[in-house]
Length: 372
Image (cartoon, rainbow, N blue to C red):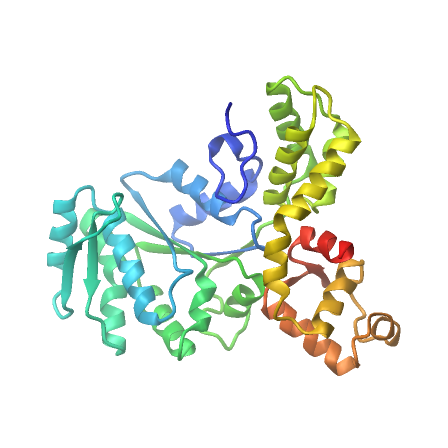
């Protein structure tokens, strides 16, 4: 049986729905050389969207490079990972990769070793110092590749908010901005899973990346698309699900893309030929159970006040956290403590602000909080 509902990883073409507007905008930005910041809460489909755009636009004139920098902890690791991705993904064979390395680097010491990764058998090692000149040389690779191949190179960097965690991050961000803004045939798409941190990089006029490019906020997929997509998946397997039941599934997880797919899968497993409301109840219980260990891990280091703040948001409080009524009801301590708690939870990525109101980044965590 085909994989009906995909969650926990980027979705492929068969499980991709809607995003026509965002797809068109990203494609236009990439072709026109406009840098783009893609922002949304965790698991709303940013990576899937970018990979779809890459699949539809990759050709001789547009060369795409995709790199996830989540595991990097230093500026040197970032540069090394980016350089490896660029050289590997723009080379059609190992011989070309080696030629590119020999032709590009003059000052830096570079080594090419065998890698256990079957998809990328060659690993490029750079003897990077901490000086800006070393960083600038390695960050110039995309522009040199673009010139050599007479093409535009599109660099898509996932989990870009990691750069804010490096030592002397602001200096490194200035280096990135200085080098990248002068690369005429290289375009950058920067996105990540921690919305608050991403916004702080691009929306703060004191930061190096302020006004560096177009900011695209990913919205929820509308019900009309989910209705057709979900009913079609159930129907393909001889099952019937009503529009009302599909709406209940979507609203239960606040139209969160990954959770809609995951909940649909559990409902599919529990249901017979015709989906019942009890099947959806069972699916929701399974969804909470499957994520309980994750929620316990993400909240184990939180203070009692932070947990009570999250419970307040899960209960429907979205503003007025400094009011005496909210502070008293949820035991938030004081107005100043409430403000500090809100800020810390935003920085941790557990909350996000939408239309000036505070929401939990994870709607299933909201159900778990109210259930414990």
